[in-house]
Each structure stands twice: as structure tokens, then as C-alpha cells.
Length: 231
Image 1 (tube, helix red, strand yellow):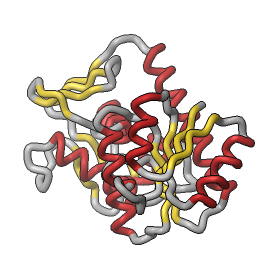
Image 2 (cartoon, rainbow, N blue to C red):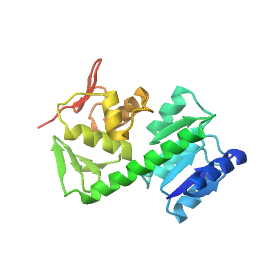
Image 3 (spheres, rainbow, N blue to C red):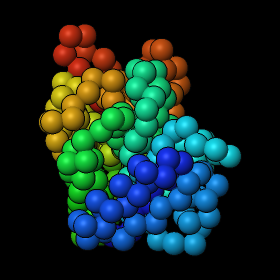
């Protein structure tokens, strides 16, 4: 597995590289976002660990560039621990957000979990027969991991797609935020309400005619969310 590290602090970059290599990963370490883009264009990368505050191209804008072409797992590792920074990072398509100072053990556990889930998800998609889910003007193609609205492709990142797919597979069933997190992220230990809320908000902005009055993804106050099947 190839892991990209984009971190401008040399000591942290070297520490991450050393620990990941000791776990058997191949590590590509760079000091800014521009170098990271060059690596992504030249090498196969299975997961990226990004700092936010980097010269030339910061982590948020780097992630925007990554999500134009790739759904690889991305973990932010940054000193910016404000809630709005975390919401922004997750909203841009990050799979995880870890604040410095950090536990090396926790980071390694998250890396392993994201790589495993991404590998299993791709494998399951290959093994599953072609199928699609259709509700109203939404069509989800499982074989291509894509969603269309009124025959127009909807751009979803990997977690948004998985979350929408899970809801569409269980129409009218009410899920708590924690149940959705467990189903899509496949873990409880790092559960965070904001993660689900941000992803649901972004999905609504993309699939609903009026996100303020959603017809598909309904909020069940005090409980969670459900997908309303439209005929």
C-alpha cells in the first residue's frame, strides 16, 4: 500500500514516515500541496495524510484537487482543531480529521481501518452483480458507483455515495446518526455527530430540488434520518 504524506514540518513528516514504514507501508513524503499533486499524477496512492497549513497549496485546496479525480481515503492531520475547520474538511470530502498533538497509535489504527474498508468496498463492488436503485428522478447504479438525477450525473465523493446508497437500500427505515456512521465508516470509536450532519447536508444540496425542504432524505427529529421513497 502506498501512502502519501503532505506535511511541511520536517520532524513530523519524518516521524510519520518512520512509523508507517515500520508497519510495512510504502511512504511518499512531501512538504507541500504542489509536490503532493505531482506525486498523485505520477504514482498510485492508496491513502493520503494531509496537513492543512502548507505553503504554495494548503490542505483544503489540495483535497479539492484530489476529489476532482480520486476517491482515495484522505486523513487530515493538523493543528487546526476548531469545529468549523473540521466541518469544512469533512465537507470537502475528507474521510477523517485528526488534531495535533496526536497519538501515533491512533493514527496508525485509522490508517489501517480506512485502507481495509476501501479495499473491501472495491472488492465487494467487483463481486456484486449489476444492479440499480430507482426512486423518482434518482437512479443509483451500484456497478458504477454513481448516481443520476434527471439523467444528469451527480458528483458525490466516496463517503457521500456510500451513505446515500445505504439509505436508498433501506427506504422508509429510520436510522440514528450513530447507526449510519457504523454502517458507512464501520466503526464506533471515532463516532462524531458532525460527520454525519455534514455529509447529509452535502448530499441534500446535490440531490434535492430544495435542500431546505428535502423530499428524499428526511430528518426524523430527535432520532436521525430516513430515505423517503418517491414513486
